[in-house]
Image 1 (tube, rainbow, N blue to C red):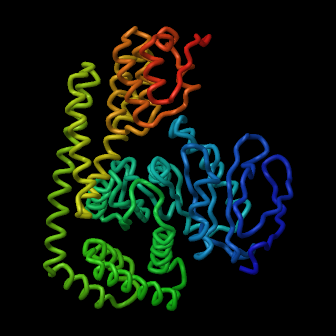
Image 2 (image 1 turned 180 degrees about the vertical axis):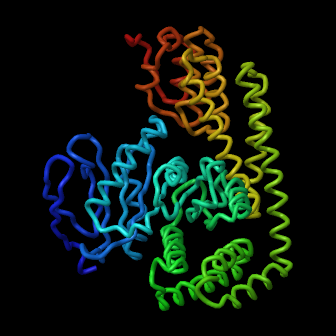
Image 3 (image 1 turned 45 degrees about the horizontal axis):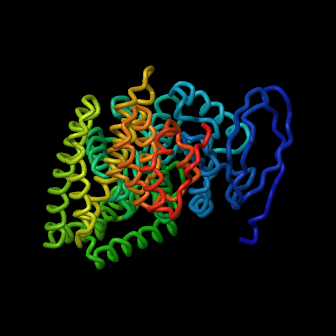
Length: 470
């Protein structure tokens, strides 16, 4: 830690002008220009072990909201420990085409390569969610990508995978993430294609995994590099991480988590097979799979995954039909589905809780996707949007924006009975922003009605009776 503030100077020449850049190690640097001719920038982190005369592996991080620095900061602890340079563009966006994002990425790559000593056979891409999906496309368009680390995201296009142009894919997913089952299916596809891959589980939902999980992924990249002789085998590194993995598998089993333990051992079997004797891994894995605890846990989860696929299929079918027909009568069925999800969430069994979390997040994401599709249309179907926002008040009752959207639209078409119903639902859910409520679009006539103000007074103690100019 005593070197944390160390820094060095680099003189570089861009395509037009020469610039002198001061780069510090051990901190995230933001706003570094790609070149002098474009308004593109990237964030950069150099580990404190970095030396200007020694090439390092590099991990390019993608965030399709253009928040490169924020995304990059999630990797710094792991990058520091294992000596990775990490860089992230601030300009890739989900609003841009794949082609435009690839061009932005390529320009950033070239800038980093011209600026820093990079191991050309150790170039990795990574990202979370949509950033992870984009990262899986990068090897198809830019040569030299060694591996992809994808969090909460499957491979964007399996059709473009080729055993002749493989990259090492590491997928990381939480057991409460609605993509959990899809990641398992992706692994099976990659195995059939003989495509090098790992799948790491953690206990969280659709969110960034613990730092230790990110570290585990980088260890697998390092081990793969040693197995390919692109890195010298570090015997102490291999022994330490092998021992850590065995301890972790044993601890998970002691906690009655046999499926987690099996996953750790299975991934270790792949990673360590080219490097050390794996008899202990094989023995432990074989013993585990023969145990009654493992078999019952495996069978239960397999049955729940089949149930999950069926339920998701129902969600997709009925939501498409209901949006097309504005089927308000089916809102009761959706209410019943959320109650069924709650039963899973309140179950004493961990696997049921995980299923409930996956179904809840999947349904919420499905509704959001449909809202985005409607909003992207040339002519926006306001009634379809209204149905989706009504549905969202059922699936996400604590998100007040949906109630406000329904109240606004209902007032616009002079359906004040519906507007009043959702006003009371909103206030009973805990909403208290009176100022925003009295400025809500399309509600000028509704909010001067006695019913509106009586309802506001009932929940917020007092109402505003004067008319507020739009």
